[in-house]
Length: 287
Image (cartoon, rainbow, N blue to C red; front, side):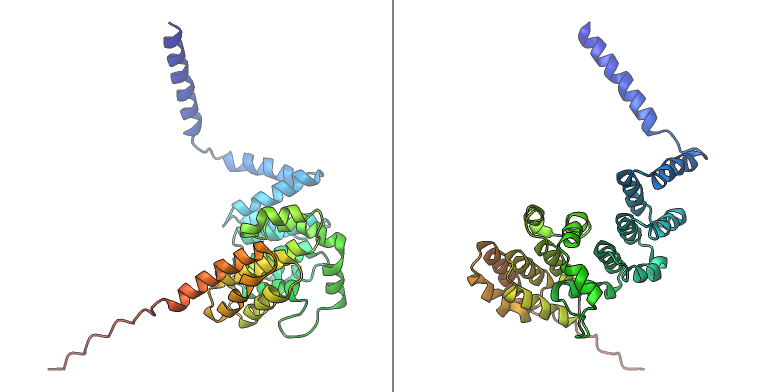
C-alpha cells in the first residue's frame, strides 16, 4: 500500500510539474517580468542592483534591455557602469558602439576593461588597444599612456579592485583561472596583466604578437609569462615558435608547461601540409 501511495504521489507531482512547465505565456508575462527586473535596476542594494544589470546581457535583441543597460552605463557607481558595459557586449548591442567607445575614457579601470571586452566581443578590434596598453604600458602607436592612465594602472588599490571585479569575471583567465584567483590576495598586478595577455591572443595586429613575445620572455612575474605563452599557443603563429622553445628553460615549472604546449602547437602548425587549392576545371571551348 505504501509503495502504491508513493507511486501515485510521484505521478501527481510529475503532472503538476509538467503543467507548470507547459504553462503558456500570457499577454501580461513580459510586463510582470519587467516589473520584477525594474525593481532590481532601481534597488539601492549594490549587489542586487548589479545582478539586475548583469542579467540584461541575457536579452539580445531586446530594445528595453539595451536602453536599461545604456542608462546603467551612466550610473555614478563604477561597478554598475562596468556591469552595464559588459551586458551591452553580451547582448551584442552594436548600436551602443559609440557609448562603449566613450566608456574607454572612463576614470575607472574596471569600466574601461569591460568596455574594451565588449567591443572585442562585437568584432571591434579597437578594443584590443586597451589590453595592449595594459600589458605593455604603451599605446599601439608607440606613444606613452597619459599620466592619468598610468596612475590608474599603477594604483595598487584600483588594480586589486579591478582584479576582483573583472579578472575572475569577464576577463578570461583560461587555464590560469584558479591560480590567478589565488594570487589576487597577494599580487595586485599580475592577474590583470595575465588576462590582458590572453585577450591579445586573437588580435590580428602583429604588434600584439610582438608584445606577447616580449611578455613571455621578459616579464618578471611568472603568471604573466605563463599567460603570454598560453596566448602564443592560441594565436597559432609559427613565427613565434622560437619564443615558445626558449620558454622550455624558464626557471618556473608552470611557465615551462605553458611554453611546451605553445611549442607543440606551433610546430604542428608549421609542419602541417598546406592545403592545396582545387584546380579550376578547364573551360570548355565555345562551339
